[in-house]
Image 1: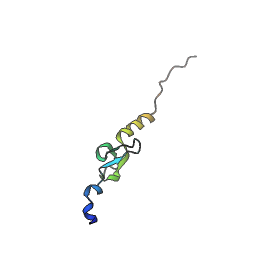
Image 2: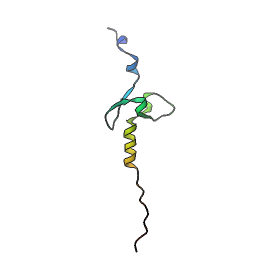
Image 3: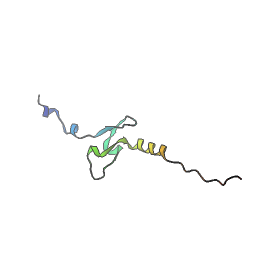
Image 4: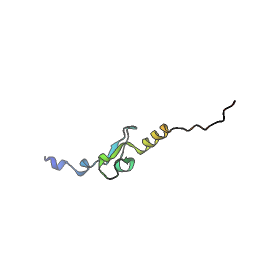
Length: 72
C-alpha cells in the first residue's frame, strides 16, 4: 500500500469550508468572499460565509435617527 496512491488532488485543493458563524460546510469559491483579490488560493477566502457576513453587517449598521424640532 503506497501513500501516493491514496492521495488525490481533491485532498490537496480545498473545495469546501466550514463557516465559523453558522457552522455549515459550504462551497469555498461560491459561498465565501475573496479577501485578497490578487490571489485565488484557499487561504485568500474568508472564514465567514457570505450570508453570515451580510447578516452581521446588517445587525451592526448604525441607524440614523431623524432630527426632530425641539418642543419648547
